Length: 77
Image 1 (cartoon, one colour):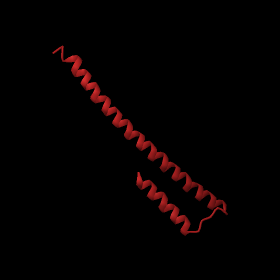
Image 2: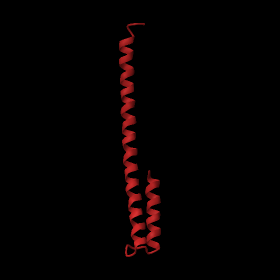
Image 3: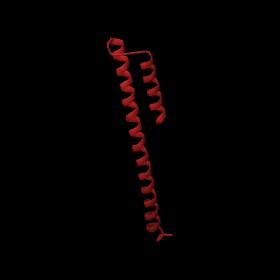
Image 4: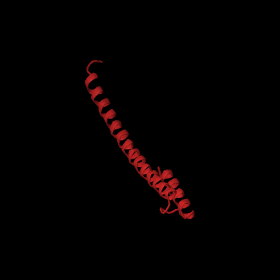
């Protein structure tokens, strides 16, 4: 997810290089759009981390279920 932060940082750098400030309507719009992009990058990063945690949790549950199935169904074979 670092690439999102890199892209937002690049765009912020471009805005600073163009001396965009919030004294004009267009400048306010662009700066708020950059802020919103940064918020989206933060949200995506958080979702990615939560997804990884869920995948790990489901993997552990799958292993535990396999152990239970082996214990329960080994008597029927």
